[in-house]
Image (cartoon, rainbow, N blue to C red; front, side, top):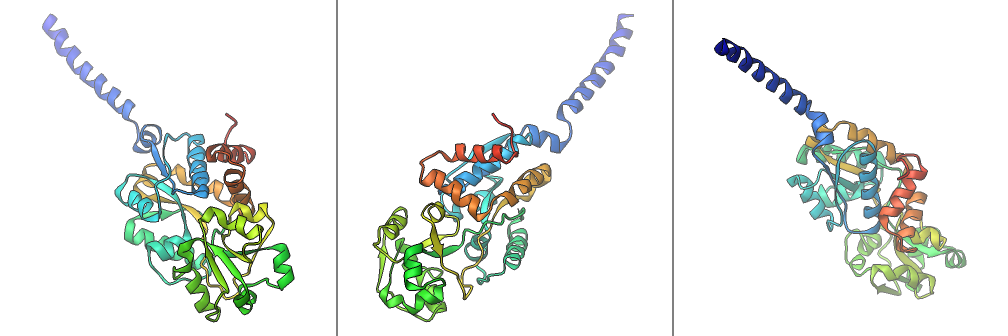
Length: 307
């Protein structure tokens, strides 16, 4: 009798164990969302720190486990992290993808640039671009309102016409890069400045406001533009490509966690030039932590719950 009971119990135990394993493992997507963290990277400057933290927070709010990989360095490091699988996603700019990663010719049409980088990344790296934000952190030239009005300069062509009497201030590499001063000179008539003042990037706006220069090298979403009420000169020859930001995601991570696209795409339309200028200045000007600025904005926008 004991032998019969043993023969009946063993198959039942095996069947129970099988059901337990199936119940614990569940589907692949659910396991990835609850067990394996989504690794969110960002490059090493203010705007990237803020947006990278936003990505992490909206994903956590959507129920994902997130591992943060901030301050990775420049584009080559972040791109290598995606290709190697060290990170699953990070914020990148369409112009950077076009020129730096894919090494394609510059162009100014936003949709065309996005379509080219999306297709190129998918084909070459199996990486996916999600929805781009309206913001455009493109290279630019800035002047104070007073100096712009005094000299009648509203466009880069206006500036080029008076270049021999103007001092420009900016980082040292801008004077050498093909998409910096040499590129502007080639597109706008091979003008010569009175002087180019090469300074640490953090000093260029103070030098402009203090009158040490007439024109400063800028980026479209720099916080100082709104804080100092500066004029961005119109790129009337459309030299600079658009630099819209979007999450770039490993296809494998997206396959395992398709819901992450909805969470990140919901954030994209909120990131305008004006919003990012304000948020960037909260960090660069008011010395707040990027994490606090990101959380406050997302809470105000109703994209995450108050903690």
